[in-house]
Image (cartoon, rainbow, N blue to C red; front, side):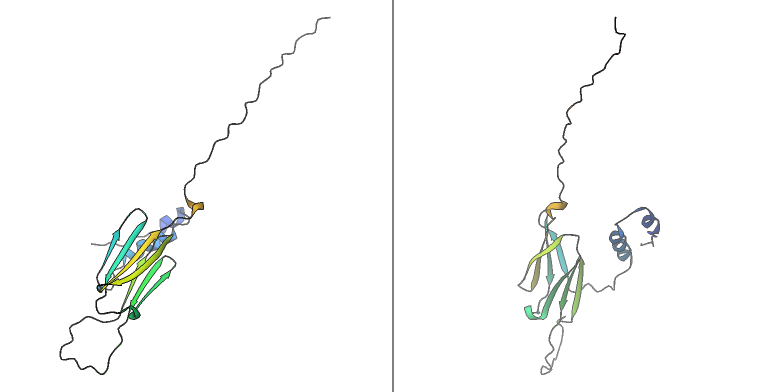
Length: 155
């Protein structure tokens, strides 16, 4: 059971988290229910991921992979052969579009089509300037506190 949540109070007290709230709002909206083609997402290591999509019957020239900012889009469109007369048409070779939201700094390493499976390898590469770094603490030389006591000068 899903309930509608209002994220507007969070917008007032947070800066730079707009994308996270947009993702949460999208997750709350029911999808079109089309789960074709089936796919798996696996985590290979802390920085490596893999998406495997079952695209049996599609050739390399009938699949398109597009990497947009924070989005991976896979299109599949089978070319129609008008000369073929089907007596039974049971293969699901209809066109499809799959969208995958990607985190910041996730890049596509490569894709291959193997045994009817489209395999897309992803890697999270955080730029050097964004990685945590240790800050050295410079100890300032201690100032000598010289207290001067003024006293009476003996004459």
